[in-house]
Image (cartoon, rainbow, N blue to C red; front, top):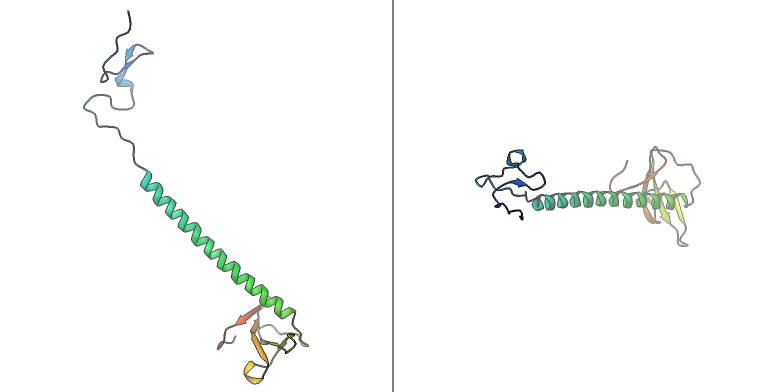
Length: 139
């Protein structure tokens, strides 16, 4: 005789041929609250947006730091390739000029005291790295 199908509201284990509603880890009677899955889509979208924002912000910080480092490298390369006949002193500000023949040279003379084409003023820090001095400020 074929097995008779039990109604959907009856919890019957076909493998064991037993009623096992009391053994389930979830409610099985008709009056039990509905089991629904939590919608995590909103949380995922918020988390993705936060992570993307954090990564983009970090990227922009690193990019700005890289650009600053490359500019510092270019200034140092420009100064070290310039001509000067003295040993620069750490903590002093020097001025970089360009001659008519495109040759660069480093000088102690300030731009307002001469008629050379000034490329900028630079400060030699304790790490032997040249830092550009902004107009109107001196170290």
